[in-house]
Image (tube, rainbow, N blue to C red):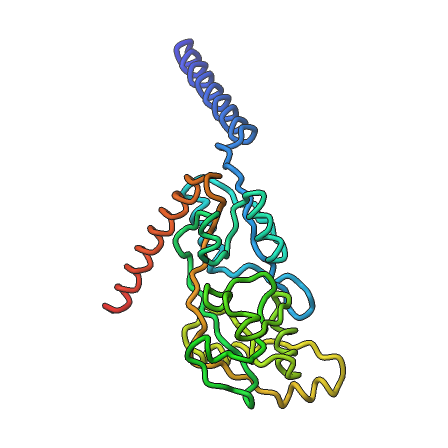
Length: 274
């Protein structure tokens, strides 16, 4: 009997000890934070709809941000500004920026990542005011609607307001389509990852144009838009940081982009084999 009592006390003490240890570990996991991620401010240009509301960041970008964060134990802290202001902050204060096009002038001060995605810059016109476009020279005498502060390639930027005029506006398609509808501009630049101009036309049909009255509404109903078949530019969208600020960060980003590119190539290969 005493032996049984002793065994019972032994197992009871072991059980209590195990419960105490489990409770301690649970409390430790709750109270003690995991290894802290390094927070990295990331400048991003705002994009607003026709009501002036911020559009959500496209999933094709956020998924890449998440992959970089996971690979390098960092956490992006998004800082969303009008594009011109975001570029100015990156140029003067040295913050990491996403969405910057590589130009000769910018290459002198920024270190760029490899392209994250490619955007095609399409020319949108009224359907009844199309014109032939093969080279920048075909824009002679035209007025082209662009996003204020954006760059569209060395040749386009060099010849704007020389060979042709630009109309700078906010990064919202609705107001610029309205200018096109009212013949205040001859064409506007429309950035899209889509590679077929007819698919871009279909997308443009879904964009709401701000209307002030019934006359505006009826005008919109009869206005059709066309996308010219040849894009102005195939533009690589990249991360960028002032040279010498944090070269390792750009190298880390490039490693993740390379890995994602290889995974994407494998997936495409598997789909072709199926």
